[in-house]
Length: 210
Image 1 (spheres, rainbow, N blue to C red):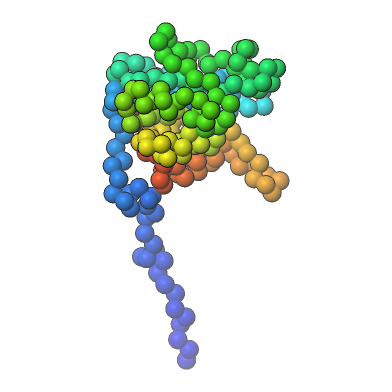
Image 2 (cartoon, rainbow, N blue to C red):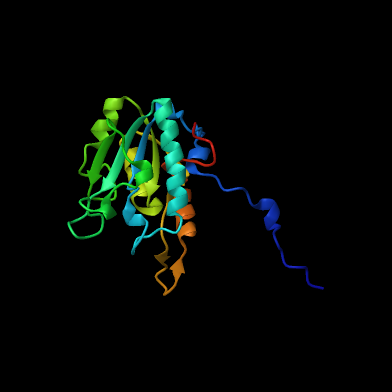
């Protein structure tokens, strides 16, 4: 008789995946909003209609508006980032399409920084402005999760900031999968957040940010 082939009990040997931050024992508690700088990235009308319309834009805007209200009440530093495109094109700041959405309109005294690249630090004075607040904790929210939020969070690590991302105050769009199909926006969003959680940012969900 032949012995049964060895079949490892996968369910007993598999372990729950952990991020590099978890393996390093990093503090993954979100900061108090009052001790942080809230950076709102590209929450502009461009994402509400047309070729860049995001399926979950409205829900993310509502979440970001609530976050902004709490940040204002808590005394957080607040910086609005707006992408600036060419005249007559996407993100034309001289038109309604390039304007920050009404629900998150900057108040007098709140800084607005315009950028031309995905990374909000590139070609802007964002780093200096954050340094002037004397806060190392930054909280990011906005559009798009896989693009400008991601590239800004990655750069922030190199610059010495501790980054938290409000997952529900971000959104992105469907993308081609390179094989003739489409990856849906929510999958792109969650994968982008999973990548960032590995080393670059704390991912806050629900009411974790207070």
